[in-house]
Image (cartoon, rainbow, N blue to C red; front, side):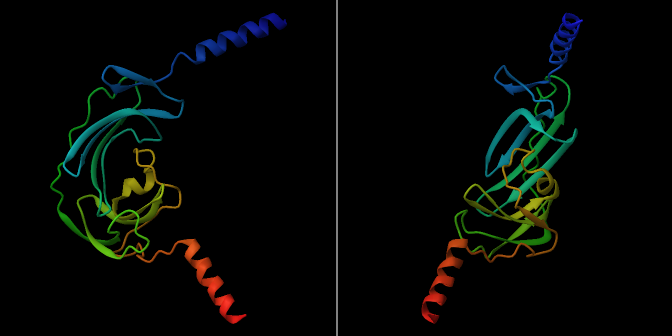
Amino acid sequence: MMKLILSLTLIWMLSSTGGALECNLGSGKTETCKPNQNCAAFADESDDNPSRLSGCVSGCAIAYQTISLNFGFVNILRSVDCCNTSLCNIRSPPYPNPDQTPNSLQCFTCEDQHDTVCNKTIQCAGVQDRCMKGRAKDDNSVGCVSRNLCKAGEVLRFNFPSGTKCCETSFCNSAWTVKLNVVFLWLGLILFTVC
């Protein structure tokens, strides 16, 4: 009986790994996706430097979509096409139209990604219908973004931490930021002068 159970378990394990999704990476290379991933192809129109990417991504909605961000020092417009069959991402989506019409939304942004106070204003355009405030690694991410980027930034190959906040009205991404070590410095000075 034990041999039968082991044999059936081995057959089940071998047959369950055979259906892994393969995605195109470009240049004749492929990637085997994890169980919760789909294939995706990207076409970027970013700061006059068009590029194409493809591979496995997690949680990407099976559809074509355009995403956009403008943080003042970086402006990216990306077409994304997600699919769920092997090598379905061989053809890249078309580059998005770089001529985005300004809309009524305005947001705060930074002069550069290392600023601690971000009080410069920026006019949103095209699909940018949200203001965002957050951090990516050690850089500030403050400016205009599209709704789908707020919902699935990491999925769409933007690496924002979970602390990123998006809002829908002009200047709702408050420009005032203070690093935590500055707060402790002021608190220490106040306590020092009082004692």
